[in-house]
Amino acid sequence: MTSCVVFEEQIEVPFVRSLAEFRAWTMTDGFPDCGRIDYLAGRIEVDMSPEDFFCHGVLKTEIVRVLAQIVEGADAGYLLTDRTRISCPAADLSVEPDVVFISHESLDTGRVRLVAKVSGEPGRYMEVEGAPDLIVEIVSDRSVTKDTCRLPAAYWEAGVREFWLVDARGEVLKFDILRPGPAGYPPSPVDAESYGNSAVFGVRFQLSRRRDAHGRWKFDLRPMRAEG
Image (cartoon, one colour):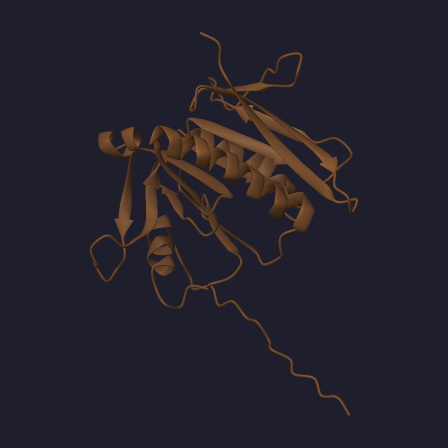
């Protein structure tokens, strides 16, 4: 005889009237420790869906692996992922992107600042306030419109220097390195070998994929130093 144990997962979202109240909620013990909960211009968006292994998780790991080597090699700043909260009051925005890069220069100049834990423990931080140098979003089935429309507009308004948008769900792998224009992030140019230029890192990147021995996707992010 078998038995079944069912856990009912509930998320209680308090009534919040502003970004400030939402940010205060994220600092409490009552804030959920799973899923992704974002605040975009007065709208709270909750995504509890798990990450797709080979269109999201493996891809994110490759991006983090390559960028971490570049950031560490140059001692350029901090590369962050998974549950890193970014709040931008200028854009009425508080989100947890897939990957974030914050340069030492941005911290030194006050472009961004680290927000300490409520406990005030030295060296303990819960949030980044301001516009990071780079944000990476990987499109999932339940976040297409958010990732391709609402978030790019919000990141542009916040002043994010560079935005990478990646979509590995379809037959064509999409990889855009976007830099702000006068009214948003215009389409990014690539060269004949599909390398796009990152102004933040001074590196050109090419993203490709192939099937591994088990027939599953394996991704390769290749950096190439910009000439000159």
